Image (cartoon, rainbow, N blue to C red; front, side, top):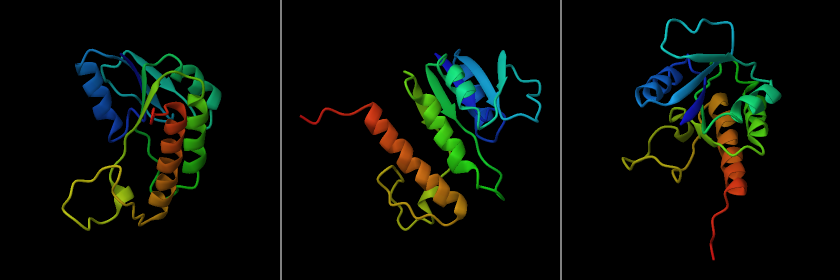
Length: 152
């Protein structure tokens, strides 16, 4: 498979890159810019600005799967909703899978010992989590529209 990994140099993204390479998959590692890809065994790197919907669309069209492991600075989440809206816009009319990778901040402090899944109530505890919760709802709706289930 061919993977586009957004946020490939980040805390989560670097592990996704390594796992895909170890599995023998083709990887395009994408970073925001300003940093160095370092000496990693990734044959292809791309640098995209988060607002470049056309560039993302062109790159996404090459992939079997886009893995989004990007993150914003913890002191400024103001551009996050626009960045994620641009990502969904770039995915329009493209037959590729989209996987969003993040931590469990959406769910707040645990109120039970039950496993956390998509049905667990979300309890945002910060500005970051409020923005992220909005994106999760939007992307879930986006997925439901693109891949409706047959209920009949």
